[in-house]
Amino acid sequence: MPIYISRGRYTSDAVQGMLANPENREDAIAKLFQSVGGKLISWYLTFGEHDWLVIGEFPDEKAAASAILAAAAGGSLAHIETTVAMTAKDAVATFGSAGKLAKQFRSAGRS
Image (cartoon, rainbow, N blue to C red):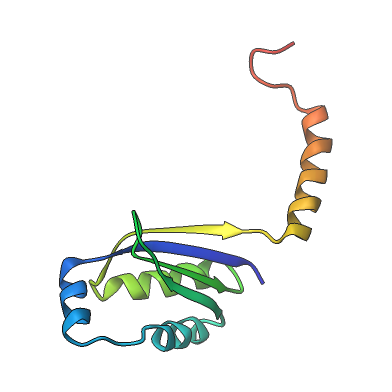
């Protein structure tokens, strides 16, 4: 199953709410991912540009987008970015295929 990494920020209202009533969001995220056929791999609170990072497996991009959009619809999340991730095995296969294509492809401005 494809792996997706999402990261983003909490709104100031969400931070205020969680300071007043701390809660473990991992269970809620796991249930959300399961509801679309996905699986939560891990969830992290992070520091810096992003407040949180979540890694999940989904059957396809529609399932991943549905879960992320559903989470965003609650209004507590902002600046969400989602990236598809590859395993090392998939990366090796991809570089192998790309190497063959690169030999056949003519770059712009090159003869």
